[in-house]
Length: 282
Image (tube, rainbow, N blue to C red):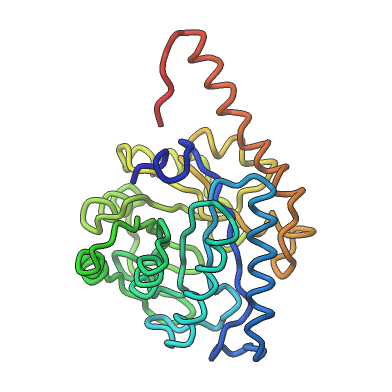
């Protein structure tokens, strides 16, 4: 996955648009226009704050189905993502919770989005939806059948889940890339708002051997400078909300604050390498 080609930067900050409950979900309110208006507001706030890309997910559809989502959700997400792509000039990704990467791939391909997030691409995870099995074989075949170039970012030992057995992080990263053919991997803490440790990021980065490693949760303006010294990018949501509360809307001031903090180590690195007449590579 060529990060610079997609995001025009080697270490992108990707903001998340959490969609309000969609049709057929337990908390669906019956008003799709309200969902669209909120999504457009959040995408605009993220773009104004300076993110390098956005990812759209059906976050408020919990409790989630563990496999294929209802066609109405696919239809609604397709409509919304298309509108957002016409609204902001940023790379767009899609995450269909809990683990319907095939629907995400279909939506992304049809609306010309750049990437998807697959929560479980390989292995088996015990979750609150039950056991979720990775379906890398089906997803990669489907992408080929569609003639799609959509990138796949895959979680490794995804949050809100426990693996069957005790897999080594290094092994899990290698298998996700080498056997699951992920274009990039995502490392999170144990839950939403919880960051991965620096030690785990270093292990994942070493195991990835050049494949991009993203932070999938817990980044904020205080810890992002250290995290981004190791990671190749960050997907962030909670800390960008007003008051840091997950149910609130995106605050562009908090977005700008995080962007500024994240650029600090990169700016220092560029200065150091420039003085040594070296070229910066991702």
